[in-house]
Amino acid sequence: MTHKKLHFKLIGLIAFCASLSFFSTAQIALTIEQALDIAEENNPSMKTQKLNLERSLYNLAAQSASLKPQFSLTLNPFGYLQRRNFDTFNSEWYTSSTLSSSGEFRASMPILLTDGTLSLSNQLSWQDNTTIRGEKTINKAFTNNLNLRFDQPIFTYNRQKMALARLEYDHENAEIRYALQRLNTEISITNQFYAVYMAISTLSISQAELANAKTNYEIVKAKVEASLSAREELFQAEVNLSQAQSLVEQRTVELENAKDQFKQTLGMPLIEEITVIVPNIDVSPVLIDQAQAVQQGMSSRMELRQREIEMDLAEFELIRTKAEDEFSGNIGLQLGLTGDNEKFGNMYDNPTSSPRVAISFSIPIFDWGQRKARIQASKTAQTITKLAYENEKVDIELEIRRTLRNLDNYRTQIDIQQKSVENTQLTYDLNQIRYAEGDLTGLQISQYQAQLSNAQTNLVSARIRYKTEILNLKVRTLYDFENDKPLVPVRLLNQITLK
Image (cartoon, rainbow, N blue to C red; front, side, top):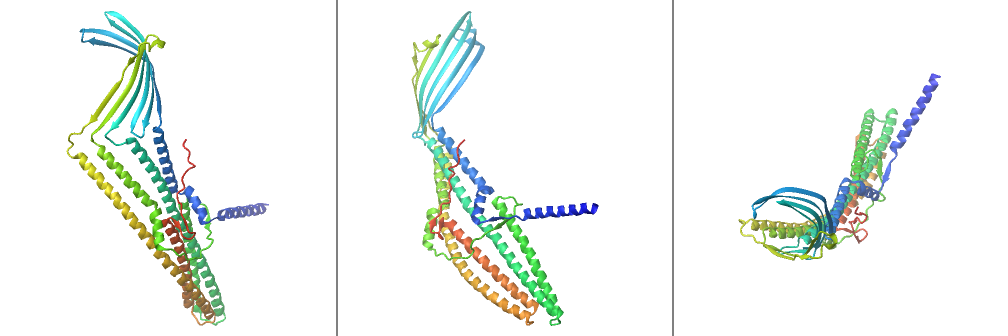
């Protein structure tokens, strides 16, 4: 009975381990398009740039809202003050106490066109004032102040327009950074995608090499047992077999490391098991005109737009610097109407008009050259941004020209490696027959096997380099030459709703 229980437990344990093995070996097969979609949602850098884009959008929305009419209400429902005062005119002390309640409603409207502000305020108050100066005097009354005011800065720049323009540039820059990060992520994902594919391919080549080594070992073993070959040939065959097994183990580790690196870039859990699907690694040469490629890059590259934004912001900074300690002024116009009465409904029986006109100027006199030095510093910064723009244009052209040369070279290398694989395969097949007939040693056949494996690896590597360089050209020019259409890398986040 005990043996039966032990037998059933052992069966259950084996079934449990088999189920774990099944689930642990389940793999997620990814195409490059699926990998890019996963990275766009989970890649840490992509998520950061997306959040920066949202932040700039909220800041721009807040600034736009600040240019609309603003309303505020201030309430002081209860206030009491008692104090001892001295009347200098009559040279006597007196006591006063005030019980009050007030509220103010204010509406203001920024005027973007002129940088002025139009405001309307209404202050309603009630007070019960008691004064003891020999005799007791009591005054209770309602008071209402209604004012319409306009303030206009003069001889200076429009601060409201500049603040809005800065945030618009910030939002556009965030869109560009998001798009560039997406392109850079696409390059990184593609490189790592093909790195996994390369690891799979080299592992497959090593497994084929191991299979050949096993076949050769069996041939030599049979010949040695039949006394048709020297025993040292069997020793060499064992060495070749162990080296092939070691290489398979090494390539397996390299594949797992490449997968982990790929999963980290995708933002996937490292415990997930993945593999990659490459629909077609064959290369179809694409004829590309260098002048067209350069022209596409110059007209489409977003880095140039970033440099233009930097130049505009440098101009803004120069304007702001010039406004420090500058001659400026302000015009203030106000129309007011004040009424007071003991009865609320009679406050404006005898109103008082209170118009106001004020003009003020700020006139700098001497600052020891501080303003002039700051202006020169801003002009120097502006010159630096212009130089960066010109250098960026040169860098773009150099990158495109370099990429086109690489493509020409990779196309040539693919043809050479393709022919090399064909020749080394024929050479190995012929020499394997010679090896079986005893005309070659184990060391010699291992050299032919290594030559074949290297040729196969070099062909896969050349094709991958060409594929990644085609993507590199697409990123450098923002044009898809394989499908002959422009690339639109920016996905505007229209789905973002302000809460």
